[in-house]
Image (cartoon, rainbow, N blue to C red; front, top):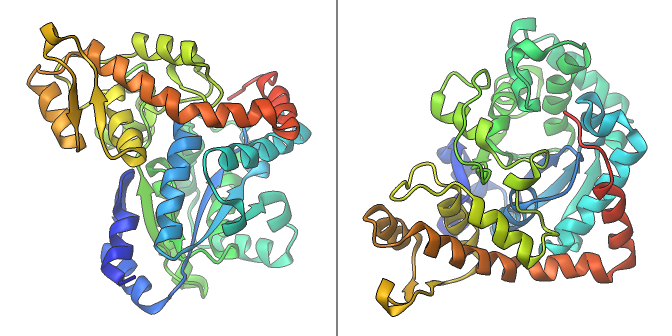
Length: 363
């Protein structure tokens, strides 16, 4: 496979930004199997964004010849007060994530799974942590805590200042050539790019992916980013803490239909539409075509072969929000059905799901 094809795979949706594309191309030219990583706070049930979409993007990297590390950030969930700070529960949730990714289609034999609590046992980890700490100001760290899903004004504990430095340390301890995380993690990845060469490491390439919007539609809390568009994306992302705005990998057909029917989907709105995002980032990544079944009096059944066609028809009012929702719900049912069944039929997976389902989600 030539470099251009490998680059094309990495750029596929939901990739949103590459810093820089020139550096990524050079990396692919000089390294046959560069290392990429994505990290996860283990803090609740997996949904379309953290489960299905992540599996899709991970496969792009494997197809492009990259080695990939799934980083289970158990200590980070603890620092961020997730699941009430219960480390045992946080670790059980990490085991559940592994089962979830497996069910979503990730070939776990082709990826490396690393736990933060294991990585941090190395003396080299904390030596690197200290080196990074000496090259960053307190104000810079405060601005970076938004990667935790928190605003600067929420800094109440010293742990919140430790978190970003540890995440920057991870990049080098994992030997990651590519940081493949959500766009909300951009600040710490850019920090690593800046500091890496100063302490004898490399400048990692940053491949940031889009954050799937929650079914509630666009909201802007302010305080995450100066850029209004990015701030809105972070504020609006699908969240496990808001069950009716997220489609979970365990949802039944009826639950999916109800959630999608209630979802925000303003007619002709193609800019801030969570239902269209599902079509773009998930359905067209899993299927070659998208069929919307309608009665003849409403235009009859229509088959789309690209997302741009769907967007064009919706923008022009040729595709009604309800028809779009009905079709999306049925496609999601097809996608989620085998995932849900894995947790129903596999005793280990079912037990882990029950543990996490009963957990109290905390911020």
